[in-house]
Amino acid sequence: MLDARADFVTLVGHENLWRFALASKTGRFGSVKYIFARYRGSGGGDEGSEQALCALAAAAPRLPHLCILSLERPGSGLVSFFDSLPQGVWPRLRDLQILFATAVPEFPRITAAAPALESLSLCWQATEERVCAARTGAFARLDWRGLLSLSLGGTQLGRGAGAALAQAGAAGSFETVRALSLSETSLTTTDLAALFLARDAFPALETLMLDSLPKGTKVDTATMAAALPRLKYLNLSWSVGCGVEANWGGVWPRLEVLVLNGCDLGDVALEDLASASASGCLPGIVHLFLSRNARITCAGVTSLVGVAWPRLEYLALDGCGLSGTATRAVAAARDSGRLGSLNTLVCDS
Image 1 (cartoon, one colour):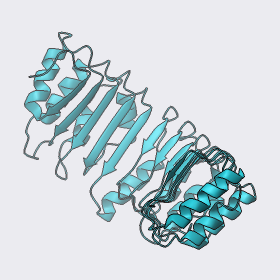
Image 2 (cartoon, one colour; image 1 turned 90 degrees about the vertical axis):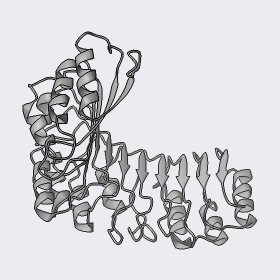
Image 3 (cartoon, helix red, strand yellow; image 1 turned 90 degrees about the horizontal axis):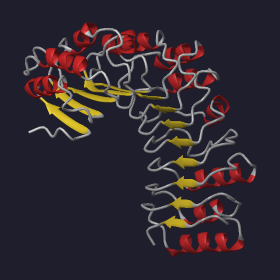
Image 4 (cartoon, one colour; image 1 turned 180 degrees about the vertical axis):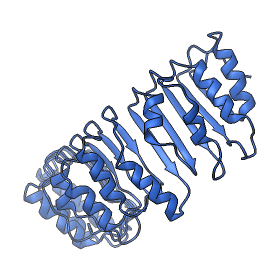
């Protein structure tokens, strides 16, 4: 039974989608703000979902959030669903998530249906090179000047994805984007170089998720810092061999949160970070996450806190197998004033 007072509704299968769509026409679900629709498109085992989603779209023009969890088979109905939507059918839609789809509509179809969209999350399953190449080509035609958040986490992208994103960014498509997730993508070292050499691709970016990159994909932090001067949050967790283990570079004037969990870092990386802080390249770090790096020793921690981190409030070293010597080194650094703002230490000992 659907609760007419709910602000979050989960709809599984086309029958519930139809039921909700019909009830919405009477104004019964006027408080709903977020819909999670799980369906299989035509030919995917749940006939009628595509048409039911169309009815839902027409019945809920005020909808601000929509999550479509598509479990469709290749060639089934998500694309035709968007093709059939009237222009501007979601005039107030701010957040759209299309997850696990094997095919995704052309971006102009989405912008036509939701012209006020601010947040878009896309996750594609298919890994065939032909499909990946089509997705990559679509980026070069993307024009979404009002978008604030873009997530491609978990997506397999085609060759040249970095260059395609950079091309779209150079044309102004991402000029308002503040948050970008490229977690668990298939981006290569060449892709990242192309993306961040284009220094005007993401001029407003403040949050970047680059965790769980393919092993060996290298990140040039100096180039990234120059391209993203407004960045406040950077996550490179579980990107083993990404290059930050002994090569931290660039000036990061606004970076406040740096997450390097599970990157197989050792003492050299901590010495590198300490050098960056001492030289003023990381002046604003408030939260520093170094968890699950088993090669870090107490000597590395001593080097890390041997320099000033004037704004540091939170330091995570759990999962590194450190002894009480590391804890005492941090406490001594705090007492000396080098870590004057530290109030939280997460450690095994």
